[in-house]
Length: 310
Image 1 (tube, rainbow, N blue to C red):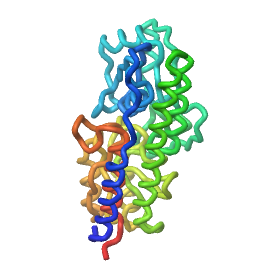
Image 2 (image 1 turned 180 degrees about the horizontal axis):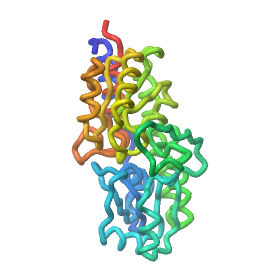
Image 3 (image 1 turned 135 degrees about the vertical axis):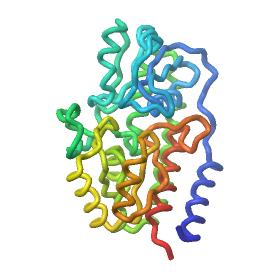
Image 4 (image 1 turned 30 degrees about the vertical axis):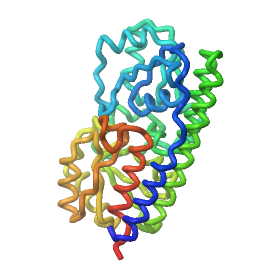
């Protein structure tokens, strides 16, 4: 990446860090038990709920929701919950059985309700178990859609705990401001990649909403779930042909996906492998340990690989 691009990105990231908004309100005792199905949603609920919410996140940071195996403690958390926050659209394939087994009376809050959804992309050689799903569930890769999700979380918490309304409204307002800053920052960063070069090829189909927001064409090696089997030889050859035809300098693995397949495809196609992208939160202290951090990491990784050298 050329020096001017690096300087611009560094300035954007430093500006964001220096402009952090005040911490969410946390001066109220826990009033609700809530469960979030996976790490990103856990971050969102924590931002809005603060200390008024006793939060359990089923799939922790660094975990893959597609391959999650529940534990008995997870069933206990569901049984005790007042609210369950989920993506829906068949994303949490294990949740219905868990809810039924736990006997919980918790209200399920589906955070894709009311969003403008993108169709799921059919792929060769995989996703048979997900073939009936009509929409792509990875909505959180677009900060503007996340702002709507935050409002849904806020309203659900207020309905369940009216006494905490002022706290939930303040926390949601502050976090939406941070999301607005993030969105503007990403838009400025991605503007460094010429429109004709905004082609993002990743391990699995998680980044369509990022592409929809910032003008990228998105393709993937696997389908919409990381459980997909490796494509057969004919499909691999077609993927390599697509990469060559696209003329991209790099393809991207993802932190929750074994990189070996995309590394081999990149070698066969004669392109580089970019930094791994986060589509769920990374481990604590990683570059993706919060939603804001993971989105900034992704922007830096994409622009570093795709912005033209000068």
